[in-house]
Length: 210
Image (cartoon, rainbow, N blue to C red; front, side):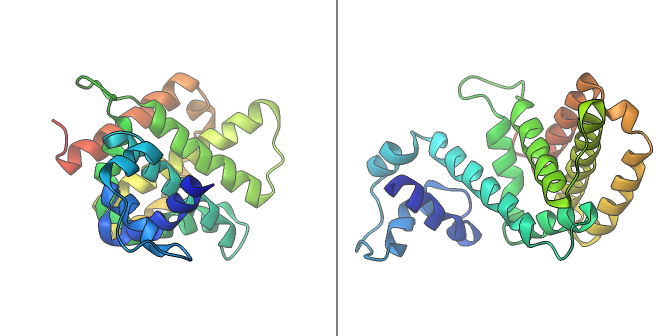
């Protein structure tokens, strides 16, 4: 399908164009039989959504791509897998605060911010990490394990946006810390509040929203 093909071709362009409609427009130039000019703005809207909806499509496509990179981690330890996911952020780190702000912003009107995209993001990272590591937890242990990993990864990613040089050390510390309090982070309400605070911190630090 052309839409999916162009979305995949736009992902490498995020490094230079950010999570923008321009990156989506330029994707057509990388086709095996490339067009001689970028997509028009109406064409971008038709394929990917109007206004910022197209940017959200690109952000979510990039997040899917970054999770796929976790499979190339040097080992099946959760620490190495999550570190490899953090590594995928590095080429686009400057664009991530705005991207997260956009995902957490309502489609219309003003904040409050929506914590659901942040919750889904870190939960999917945790699910993938558990799958790659061969985790076979079931029942309450399944939820506790994923909540612990999601909380540690979310904290490390937030730290990476402000102090990238120490992100990997922070990740290891966060994993160790959450493993000691996994009974508390297993509470859905507490975990949801954690994700909301983390993303609100990301967005506030970016200066994008008050």
